[in-house]
Image (cartoon, rainbow, N blue to C red; front, side, top):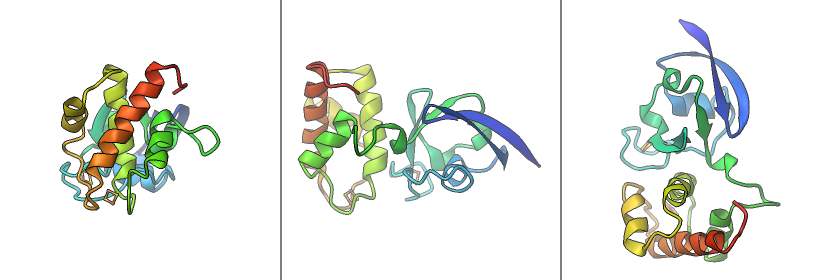
Length: 160
Ligand code: FES
Ligand code: FES
């Protein structure tokens, strides 16, 4: 049975009619109209659907939307805008840390979760945090460098 589910999506209070057991990813991309989180494996194994739920990285494909009622959900759309990109987005663009881009929305929110809990991660810590994210284009080195660059700029005061 459908019911009204209220949540905070990218900083805005929203409500949506859905079955509580519907996939969070389907509801985000469908009735809620945000397409940053992407379907890859559907089994919580690739990271392309990653979102933050109350600041914690989760696979939206493996969560029921009912589980985020009353919680704050952030997708890559909540990070920044073309006019005011998040330092992570700016660094990824600057270092061209991507090829097809399919994995990047999930990697960006995963990197944000990392920098929120560790402002100065070393390369191994960045690699470990992003380890479950699959990038079939093989731009891993640039991705690690971009996260480190964004972290340095944020420590130097770049607004996030
Ligand atoms: S689509 Fe959710 S982790 Fe792969
Ligand atoms: S840039 Fe293509 S999958 Fe990562």
